[in-house]
Image (tube, rainbow, N blue to C red; front, side, top):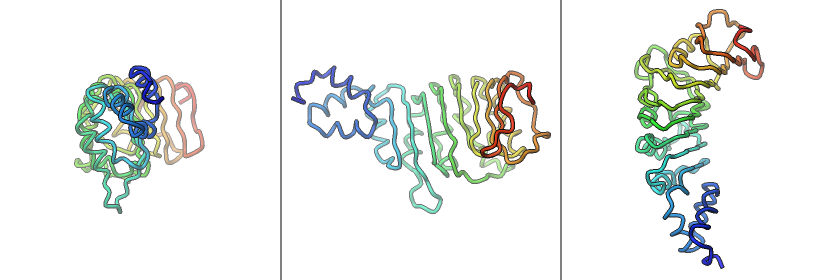
Length: 239
């Protein structure tokens, strides 16, 4: 019975399966496996939690189609596991990535050259990177050339505490969130990279907001939070 499903119909079904279930489906029988591997679009959305070892093979199966990659994976500095499958794979495929989410990848940002590759198709990126250590603001080695400064379609970006090459500017970003509490010292290093944002969320470390830098004139909505407390939430005119 399972071999009687027409190839096109089966591929339409497989397209909607989560990554984990899709991998299992390729083990059902040779017919299902052949159908899955013959359609790169089936592998265009990759979602992995903890086990990232399949990532290189999954990206390979996607052929040349645009990719959406969602990864939740903790990389500890005390572990011999440095998240190499993530880093090396992103270095090869960033030009095809349209959506990217890296969650709980604590130390990956420091050692992930793929994040410095151009991302011409990228529209959404969540790089909250929970647990990232504080990096010196005056150390050029920690200033990332995020996406090589080339992400012309990027509209929404979620960041952790990162420092940028001051020449990097993303004029296309309209919605910016900073999910890890940041200090007033840090914000001037980042906000100039996003001159056209209209929506902004900041998690700050204290209630004194008087010395923050000027916001972009395009900004119409801002949410400023101190951990779980909303200090400001509304129209930019409330500032």
